Length: 121
Image 1: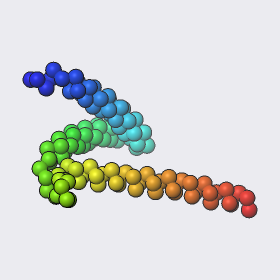
Image 2: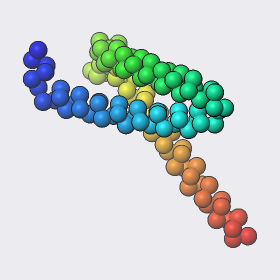
Image 3: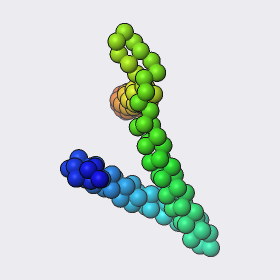
Image 4: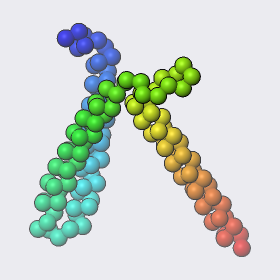
């Protein structure tokens, strides 16, 4: 019960709630746009199915995050630095985001450079 008396807990809850609301609205808009392209008699079924799948997926992802947070037992030791599965997953995810964003920026800059050369000729 002491957990609920800490300000950090309430800030984390508010942040998570805000993120869930924003992502939920995003899901509703996307599913409505995609379902709008279907024939009229299939649109309601597509909306309900899409929103149900989104809700189930979000709950499963939240449960997997709580499982990953619990993986704190050291599994790898480098010199005097211990790494747990949680640390390895977070490092891997961070490296993936760095590589992906760098490639996207490179592609965007290189694409604009090629367009300028075509316009000049």
